[in-house]
Amino acid sequence: MNLERIEHRACFGGWQDVYRHDSAVLGCAMNVAVYLPPQAEKERLPVLYWLSGLTCTEQNFIAKAGAQRYAAEHGVIVVAPDTSPRGEGVADDPAYDLGQGAGFYLNATEQPWTTHYRMHDYVAQELPALVEASFPTNGVRGISGHSMGGHGALTIALRNPGRYRSVSAFAPIVAPAQVPWGEKAFAAYLGPDRSRWAQYDAVELLKTASERLPLLVDQGEADEFLATQLRPELLREACAAVNHPLTLRLHPGYDHSYYFIASFIGEHIAWHARAMKG
Image 1 (cartoon, rainbow, N blue to C red):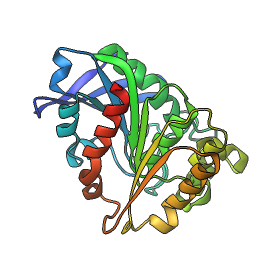
Image 2 (image 1 turned 90 degrees about the vertical axis):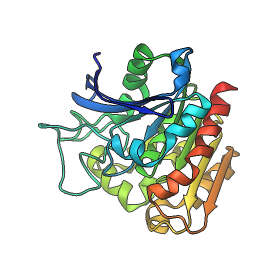
Image 3 (image 1 turned 30 degrees about the vertical axis):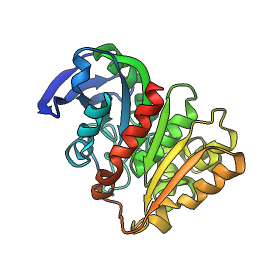
C-alpha cells in the first residue's frame, strides 16, 4: 500500500500531514490526516484514531479541534481519515446524510452501496495496518469521534474487543436504529431487516459486549440534535443494564459544533494517553 503525502505543516513541534492512498477495501483513493508529535522522531508511540461526522472530510478535525497541542503534550499520534469513500464511480446521494460524506462506519450490504461503502473494515483493519507499517507506532490504539463518528468509534470498539485500549466520543449517535439519521442510513446501506442493524448500534452491542472498555462521552446540552438524533440517555440506560463503565458528561450551553469539541479535546486526549500508556 502506497502513501502519497499531499500536505506537510509544522505544528506544535511535530508535523500535521495529509496522505492519499489507494484503498483496496473501499476501491477508491482515500485521504487520511496524520499528526506526528515531536516524540515520534525518537520513539514509537500509540495512535488515536479520530472519526468525523456527517459532511466532514479529514480536514475539519485537524483545522478546528486544536488537538495537535495536546497530542504533542502527551506523545500521541493522531490519525483522522475521511468519512466515506469518494470519487467518480462511487455511489452518492443528493442528501447530506447519505452517500459520500456519510459512510456511517459500517459495511454496506445493499446496492449500489456495497461495492465501496465498507468503512468498518477500512477503519478497523486496513487503515491501522497501513499506519503501523508506515509510521513509528507501538501497536497500541485508541479511537474517538464526533456525532456519526462518535457512533463509529463506539461501535467499532465494541465490535472489535482487544483492538483498542481506549474509546471516547463527542455527541455520538448512540442508538442509530432508533433515530432518523440512523434509520435512513441503515435502511439504505443494510436493507429493511432491522435485525441486521443491531451490529452497528452501540446500545444494542452493549447487550452482548465481551469487553468492559470504559466509555467517555461528552454531550452539549444546547446541541440542536440532542433530543431527536443523539439521545445519550439511551446509552446511559444500556450501560447501566449490563454494568458497563460509562463516564457521560453533559455540558450546559454547548452545541454540536467544533467549538464544543475544541473545549474538551484536551481532556479526551489525556484520557486516551493514560489508557494507552498505562
